[in-house]
Amino acid sequence: MARVFNFSAGPAMMPLPVLEEIAKEVVDYRGCGMSVMEMSHRSKVYQQIIDEAEADLRDLMGIPDNYKVLFVQGGATLEFAMIPMNLMKNGVADYIVTGAWSKKAASEAKKYGKVNVIATSEDKNYSYIPDVSDLPIDDDADYVYICENETIHGTTYKELPNTKGKILVSDQSSMFLSKPVDVTKYGLIYGGVQKNVGPAGLAIVIIREDLIREDLPATVPTYCSFATHSENGSMYNTPNCWAIYCCGKVFKYLKSLGGLSAMDEINKKKAAILYDYLDSSKLFKGTVEKEYRSLMNVPFVTGDADKDAAVVAATKAAGFDNLKGHRSVGGLRASIYNAMPIEGVQALVDFLKDYEAKNA
Ligand SMILES: *Cc1c(COP(=O)(O)O)cnc(C)c1O
Image (cartoon, rainbow, N blue to C red; front, side, top):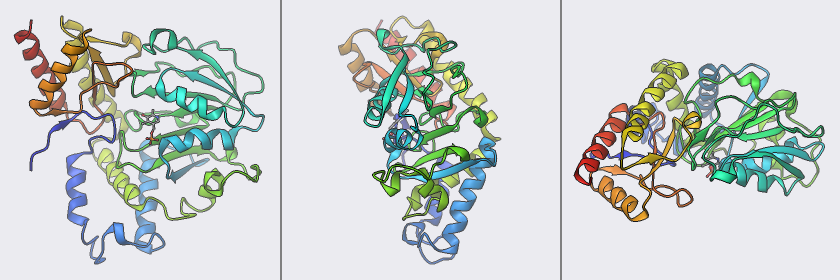
C-alpha cells in the first residue's frame, strides 16, 4: 500500500483510520452477511446507521432541536436550485458573490426569482471578502446567501454578514466540520460532503424547521422540496446509503479526536505552516489578502505560468498529488482539509523550500 499526500480540492482525502475501518466491514457488515452497499435502506440495520450518523453530526455541531438535518443527493449544485425553490416566498434574494461558487449559486437562483448581488469581490479576482457590516439588504429579500469558504479562490469570512434580520444561508461545502459554528446564526447551512467529510454524491442540509414549507408551487419536483426529505427522514426514496455510512464513520472519528474545537486548533496550526512559508518565500506568493485566507484551500503562484507548471510537475514526482491550481486562479492550490495530516503539510513545505533553494 502506498498512499500519496493528496491535496485535491474534492473529492478529497478521507482519514486513513476511517478507510481502514470501512475496509474491514466492506464485505460483511457486522455479521449481516452483506455489505452496506447491498443492504435495504428500509432495514433495521441501515436505519441505525443513518440515525447514528445524524445523532453524531448533531452532537459534533451542536445542532439545536429546531433544526432538521437532511441527507440529499445531487451535491451542493442541486442546492443552488433547491434553496431558491424552497426559500423564495417573495421571489427575492440577496447574494454576496465572493468567488466561483457563490457566482454559480446566484446565477442558478435567477431562474427562480430576483437576485440582488449586494456585494462582490469580483473587481480583484475574488481575492478578498468585501465589507459585509452594512449592506443594502432588500426589504423583500427572503434570505441573504454566502459561500463561507470559496474553494477555488481560497477566501473565507472573518465575520458573518449583518443581514439586518434576514435569514442567512451558507454554503459550507469546503469548510464543513473544520471548526465550530454557531448554527443558530443561520437559517440554513449546507455542504457537499466530498470536500471535507466523505465520498461524493451527498449534500447535508441543516435547516431551521420553520423555513420548511408545504405550500410550494406544484411544479417544484417532489425531490426538490425540503419538506419531502424532512417528513421522510431523508428516505423518501433511496438515499445515498454508502456515502451516509462513510460520513457517519467520519463523524465518530472527529468526535474521537476531540470534536470541532480540536479540529480548528489543528487546522490553524496546519495552515500556518504553509502560509508562514509562503510569506517568507521569494519564489511563491499567496493570492489572497491575509485577513481572508482560507484555512482549507491555499492558492499560491510564482507569477509565471511556466514556472508554476514546472513546480506542479516536481511536486507530483515527489509524491504530492493534485496541487495544480484551478484555471481561474492559476498556479498551485493546496487543499488541506481535516483529513490532511500535519506531516503532509510539513513535508510539502520542506519540499517547496528545497525546490526554491535549488531554483533560485
Ligand atoms: C465543490 C463545491 C460545490 C459544488 O459541489 P458539487 O457537490 O460538485 O455539486 C459548491 N460549493 C462549494 C463551496 C464547493 O466547494
